[in-house]
Image 1 (cartoon, rainbow over the protein chains, first blue to last red):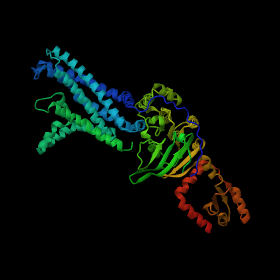
Image 2 (image 1 turned 180 degrees about the horizontal axis):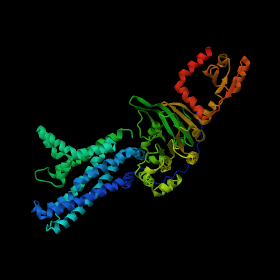
Image 3 (image 1 turned 135 degrees about the horizontal axis):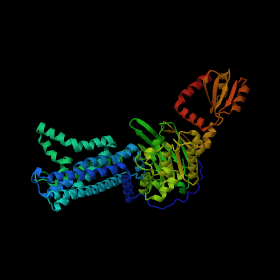
Image 4 (image 1 turned 30 degrees about the horizontal axis):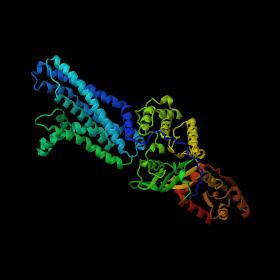
Length: 277
Length: 322
């Protein structure tokens, strides 16, 4: 090929203003991305509204005489009412968690994201951090508001729980569980890169897997299958929020939920680093 | 292939060395090496599936090369501390979440590099998106999507711009706007690497051309050189004695092809040279038409030679032997 002699004029005084790629910058970027989508706003609104609705229903039902005397302590009843909505909220945040990343792949946004952050993993880490913190805060707002509502409703029915440390811990753990499920779904979305596939996988593991394992265990009488049941994500999450003496210990259920959240994300991260965008 | 470039002009230079990309058994890009110089618009031309987009994606690290490497300013794109300030890329007009507004898209992109609202508003102004910046991208026309993609590429005020089919879907005003923008960016000393299938557009925009065909580089030369090679190189003539004339014209740098019995297309000679040769040999000419030199033609010749090289030579030798 022929040699070219393009005499380049000196590059225009490029402003060296502003900084380069930075972790706070990437986190800010992911926060802007999360808050600027309607699906996020809707999902979180549904989480809070469902939580409030469940708290109202449960506290009115538990407080009436038709149900007789409370089986549990007033405190446990309050905690149950405050966190009952979380069991439904996890389904919503699971969908959101998948969409946060799969939406980037289906729309092509991923190419913009990973052009801006070509090392890729900082973008995923920032996405995970922002999703986790936001979901935790929304969960906390939802269960505190639900707890307050339940407190009032129970009170009007003559039940007067105290705000014990167990109630506070339970509310915190419920929010932690909710945020962990969002991460779990983000991991699945990163692995599968498809909205339909990711949502199906996430909801399948949350909703169907416990039933499948239970049926399998009862049909085959396999002890290992029965042993696995408490470690499934939903069951571990339930015993994290409302520990019972015959279930997993709190540290066990929290660790289990943590693994459910982290393992898919790590697999997703490895794939993200290796694959073409 | 040292060009003796002073070190300072490494700013913005793209260098590919033995770059290949294979997807399973399919080779998209096959061992290509090229350099894109600052201060000029380098056109990247090739038919669909030639590997242009794959090459551009490899420059910014979205696709991993199977072999070889591509560097910007002597470093891999991902190794730069501020990638968006080095390279601005428009790779796909649809690289935007459809549910987000143009403004928020740019704000999120810029935030990664500490680029704030002021610069976002500036690029929105530069690309004429003021009236739609607050609207969700899902409702954008292809042209508006392209403008947004260009705005995103300009965000970091980069020394290098990689634009994959930037005029795709733009109206004539938009095409002119991109042409002017691209020319002025190069005039400022930036590196502009531009792909397009619109050869007429390339002819008025690019200074240098890299032509890609089936994953390999067919030509890498200044625009003027490629056009000059095409000028006069194609002469169409009709003669009842076509076979004899083909023999008379035969020379190392001359190619004679024939599609009809009395029709010849000669490359490597001007129309006057062909006419004089015919006169000397006493051969009757019914038609002598010099080809109109255009990039389109040069491009067709380049890619045709690549694809149909064998057939052409066979036809020529048959014709000459007659």
